[in-house]
Image (cartoon, rainbow over all chains, first blue to last red; front, side, top):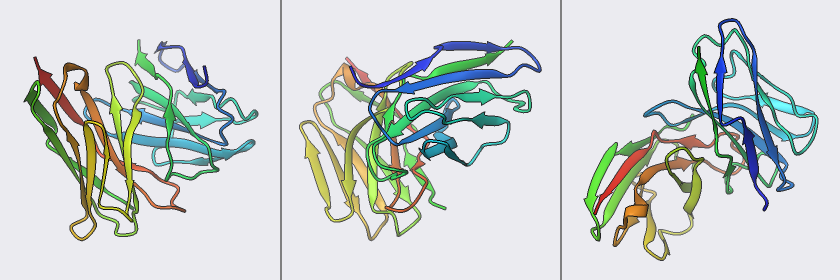
Amino acid sequence: DGGITQSPKYLFRKEGQNVTLSCEQNLNHDAMYWYRQDPGQGLRLIYYSQIVNDFQKGDIAEGYSVSREKKESFPLTVTSAQKNPTAFYLCASSGDRGRTDEKLFFGSGTQLSVL
Amino acid sequence: GENVEQHPSTLSVQEGDSAVIKCTYSDSASNYFPWYKQELGKGPQLIIDIRSNVGEKKDQRIAVTLNKTAKHFSLHITETQPEDSAVYFCAATYYGNNRLAFGKGNQVVVIP
């Protein structure tokens, strides 16, 4: 089945630790996105990538980093600089380069918690 | 930038009744308005969308209406069923904008 796979489903971070969330898609989509979801809040854009080896900051990029070395993969690293990392993280993709006016396909999310 | 607001934040309906969720947007340039449904522990899924060249779109029990003058759009769910219980997000953007602005979501609870 085509889709987006996020792993792990649950992740725990210790103080001062960097953690990496995985996102893989087999939809052959150009654009990929990372969103953060907090309870009762909408989806806030962290980073997005329209093409391999290129990515742009979203609205809340501080404390996060990404890479896009392959079309299929867009991992997100939550660094120790992110002081409030507890949230539900969602990866998404869309077919056209950065076109936001078309369907987004979401993964099933990763819940990150701080120990 | 675009600001999208959703009302009400929580909506409880009896099974079989209709549910209506309204969103307002601020940027008159926005011309694409999707609705996403998120079930517990899962990622959102697109359920319906509308572009500004039409005023209404239907897909079985769900419909979306758009009022460009008032800058609001609404999701209508008829004959609600327990599986309609979820969080619904509206969003707005336009071609060439690199942001899809989401509302904060509405929790819909269908009471059997």
